[in-house]
Length: 554
Image (cartoon, rainbow, N blue to C red; front, side, top):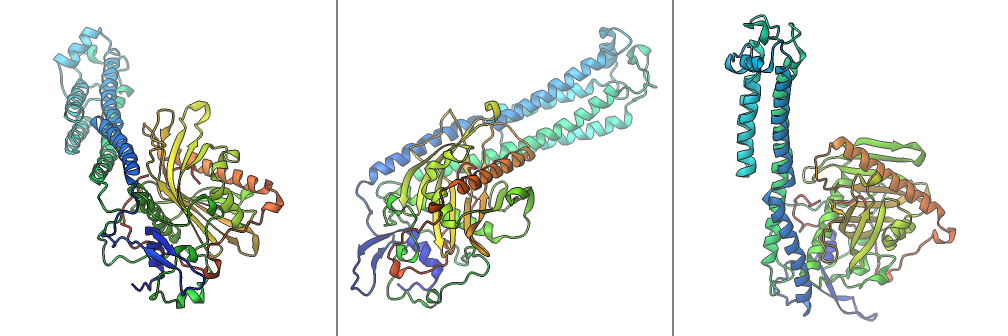
């Protein structure tokens, strides 16, 4: 079948190909290509049951965790505590106010309760707070409602009442019946204003917690649970590569290319109608190509999912790098020639951070450090405790497990991350993308808090005017999975300083490497047919928000 779009070549290659024959005398390299439209081909391996069972065990464990969390989530528990705090705070403030009168507590209670008047008594504040407390806990704790309208009604009524109270209440005690009901200070007492302000603010805090924290988080967990339950319906007889319907009007997004780079003339004039060239002949293999097979073949349903996630991460990285406006400065260090900016994207949860700096070595050497020797990361990166390649899927895709250090004095627990990584090279430009996945070898454990990777990756290219140095761009999107609400400003500050620390550690590590190691020649597969290829995005990847990222993964 003729393939004329150069972007489609990469998508088909990543879907998987099987090397059938190779001869130097033949007209071309023959490869049997399996794409997503090949729904009728038989299973690729006979031992798939082991991998499928492993995948199901991992999914079942995650399903159990999600169901347990959705029974009464941590954020819903926090909301209930805020409602309880509101009731207790208002009650304590009111009792303090009662004790400030000129008479005994009994006489003060009589003035506040028996002789209640909207103009002279504050007893209505704790009563309404108690009613709101009972209603909200009944609806959101006892019945575990997922609707917002109950809180909206209580907040509206509370705000309407306090506004009316402010206009009619006698703050200067001119209309009080007896001196026994007046505080020691016969003029406006500050506690009156404090009670009114607290009564007005607390319902809005409760609204923010429920609408911004509780309901969106539980909705995401429900979607994840539904997806995992849907995966359990996949059997061993299910075709590994199924046809998926994608919008016909979706256009491929060109991958980022540095300014001034040009595609090869051969590339633009190539005709692939006779045969599809091997993916290995179009792209340079990794410097550590001996680590994996040169056959990009999905050996199981789980590996097929990993490849889909890898393609998804590359497409998101493509979109992030293609956007040049809207980036906000977060941190800059002139001495390291490094700057960190942030931006937001509609289909990506949370902020996306971008670090740009220069490295004192060619890109090939940086690739060796960040990709080929990823397991040696703890030796130079003080923020990483463990770095382990869990699974090598093919020459350019693997699963990496990282453990990051905790905060000072273990106030902030360490995080662990599992991510699928994808590496490609086009000419002198090197690209690595990653995104969070689940893996049976490293399920979530009690020792670390599991963090989640959004679209993350880095891009390396030679520095203009100095080929012995590199321009390094690092994209980061991460959810550190805090168990309690944490202000975004604190998260921004912490992540930016972690990024800058990793950047400076990498620069120092590269400067200390032996001079003879600073020129690294990667191996080539079928070098006589190798040519520059434009890395396009994947037309068969759906536009949807990813799960979540790791600042420990590079």
